[in-house]
Length: 268
Ligand SMILES: Nc1ncnc2c1ncn2[C@@H]1O[C@H](COP(=O)(O)OP(=O)(O)OP(=O)(O)O)[C@@H](O)[C@H]1O
Ligand SMILES: [Mg+2]
Image 1: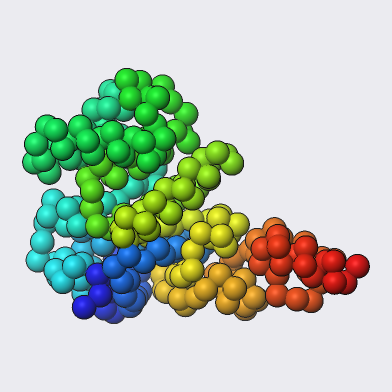
Image 2: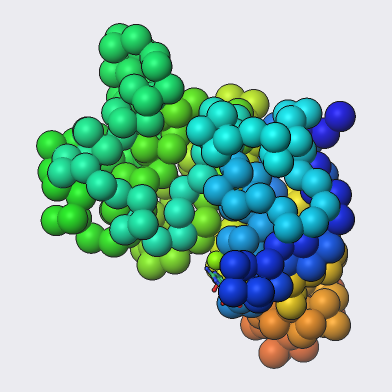
């Protein structure tokens, strides 16, 4: 059985608005998946069903063999950690340290383990220098890493990052890239929602494309960025290097700077 399985899943909000429409997919243990799609496509709603923050209106979501309909969010959050799109929906302690310690403490780990997990998570998210700060005195980009650290500290098998690239500078993007690589090396399963196509191009082999409440396709970066129709349907843009290659008339398959340099030197 797959680690995560969505079986014909739909979700309507209490006001009756259908946000996710008959979505099916599987994610295997250790995979590193990106979810892309325009605003309102249903990305956040979809991932919130993995850790039980919301339950499907119809269809089934299985996580580690558990039908999420039968388990509480508290139980499911031991399997899957979700980093909120907006850090201010997640942060509620007055120091970064307390914020990160909260999760592992709630899970009942002994104090030594809580401290180890806090240290490790702060290190991975590169917020060690801010441990005694009030999160609300930190810029949004750093607050996002505080929320990432507090989810990492719970040491779940599955990690879900909702728009971690939003508002990040080059250093922030590098921290995220490094973090995803570390998680892969640790055998964790990661799901990242992002609008940053350059980040998608370099960090993921598998991309879920969502549009209008549906999962359109599961593709490789190459397959996605060469499929004009799919890009248009999902309102996505090509990475900058591909746009540039097209603008100057390079015909080859270009996804990376290396591809570009190779094609450019052949043609000019
Ligand atoms: N609590 C809610 N009640 C009613 N409708 C909601 C609620 N939350 C979200 N929606 C609607 O559901 C749809 C899908 O929202 P969702 O947040 O899953 O999209 P998204 O793909 O994550 O978008 P974004 O890229 O803007 O974060 C949107 O039209 C949104 O307005
Ligand atoms: Mg969202």
